[in-house]
Amino acid sequence: MPIELVNSQKEPSEQGLRLVDEPADIPAIKRQFISFLFLKADPRWRRLPEEKKRSSCEEFKAVFDDYADDLLLYSYSLVGFDSKADLMFWRIGHDLDKIQELTTRMFRTELGRYLSTVINYLTCTKKRMFVTGSIEDRFHINAGEKQYHFVYPCSKLHSDMSPEEHLALVENDFMVGKKFPNIRVHLTHAFGFGDQEYVLSFETDEPTDFLALAEELQDTPASKFALRGKPVYTCRKRPLAECLDALG
Image (cartoon, rainbow, N blue to C red; front, top):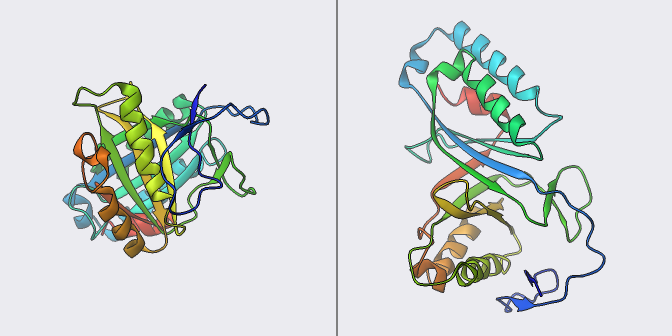
């Protein structure tokens, strides 16, 4: 029998996993690829003439908008929050090539010449599917509806635990997050894509709620083995034009 996250009917005090039979009513859901792309702007960008910056941002935005029909695209500013990155693009889609095409075209723009990749977390979904503008149900999650997004990668296993035991610990942290109704928790899988195995990310309109959750996550069994202990990036969702204007 497969392991399933049982969270749709959980009370806040309940945590963990149990073995269940696969429900017969699960719709056929195609996996989605997820990219959390973090970018840093070269300081020379701020010294360019305003007209050049304006036209360069318009060019960049036009490229970004070209993929709105192929990918779910969300832009975030990290200016003032983090010294490592200035921008984060959360990109979701069924076609991995589209994510690569968009990235290539972004870097070919005038603005793209002043951007460098800090890190790109590439993951995929299993059963749950991100949607937008649709009614949520047990298997479909509306993405990008909250003001803040905290990205919390889980590094590769460094213990004697089996992969199954490790996943159970990570999923337990997922269930801890479900105790906070104002926080939307996403668990996506990255095994084989990079140095991380999973990425937990948290959307919320109240950063203080996430701080309370982060304190609880520090005391979970998984924090002693794989989780890096604290969120790596704090991201503020804004229209792309505002994110680019914040670069200076």
